[in-house]
Image 1 (tube, helix red, strand yellow):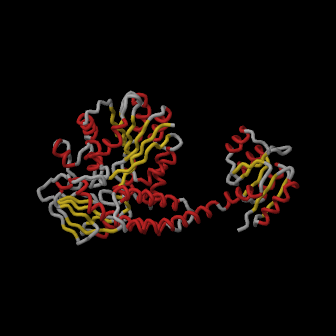
Image 2: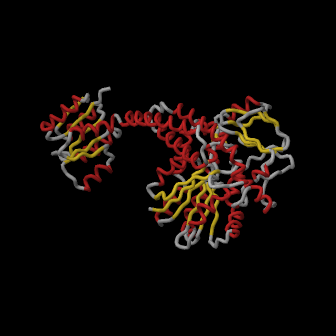
Image 3: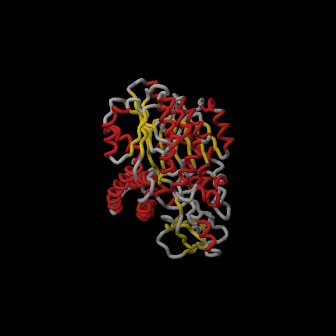
Length: 521
């Protein structure tokens, strides 16, 4: 493809060497010596880029720029000037120029500027693909090693990084390879969790990761002080890759002081993991200490929030148990108006040592995507799902709240309770009417399933600190991208839930959780 350049400069004759240089590189260059002529030619012809001298008789470069942006708003403009005045640069940049060059010009400087516009996507894609191919081999070799929990976290971070990098390429030519590698990683990771999870709970050692019930004790409570309030924001069901997308918007307002990960307990659901976070206990311990508060996940109820009615109570009990004397508040945001009310009452939050805020939108989005065809169309895959999350965040009261915290140089922890995975492969299972409905884990006293290695079975839930509604209760957890399906109406069930985002089982995406400490800029 031959790209066309229009160059407007009142001293265009003096620029002949540069024009020849660009033509020898394969570009087609047209020239004019005034802003008015440039404007007229842009109306008549299509150009791929405009070189625009700032200081020309008649219409100035900035005047031409404003006029051209109204006619051809997507035409890239490279402003060329002798002036280094800051005000002029700011005006030009504010008018959305593609680049700003100062005379005397350098031919390679011109070429770089043009390539940045024309070939940026192609060059970035080539570089990304090559770099990932090199990383692919290194990651694949790591799976064969005996890895600990921290090393698995690093692998997941690397996979997420490459997923986002490849997602930004035009053709996404390496996406299929990456998805295959993620599947392989999840197969090894699931075996790792199955082998080690009980020991993490029964015989913790230096390789044991921080789990849900210890997360606040490790990452939040040590940061409480009487100098400035700490905002602990838990966005339900926020995966690590989604956090990295939100970070792009947050980084203008906050400095990332620490980015850690922890592991969600099993099952990786709101009812278990989030209650465990705020109580600072494992689920069976919560059930033992507060039997009137714990609600068993049984039958056909799928109302997550019905299981999480006592989070504020659990939080206060944990603070009391650890002898932390802190003035705190707790807010659960389910509807937008609740988020706006919190923003309006922001100054009241500044009087607290700890403000805990739970945001449920992302979790509700994943459930809506399962049940609503329109949401499925809007978010058919991980890339689109991330985009939808980003769009919500940009226009959310949560972002408004974060901006207010930043303006006060405040401190924030952003985290979640579990992630989610897009499910693909069904496992047939049979249970009685009291078996829970979650697609990634089941608990019941009469469970039967197809022989399948892609699930973890716990016939002694007490060993995993899980409540036992019945003496014979068994827990099973789907691994990798599997989901449980009943034989009755099997095909309809599978077709409805295949490619939906679910949580409760064992995968990198569900288990490895971001916890990020930020300070306002």
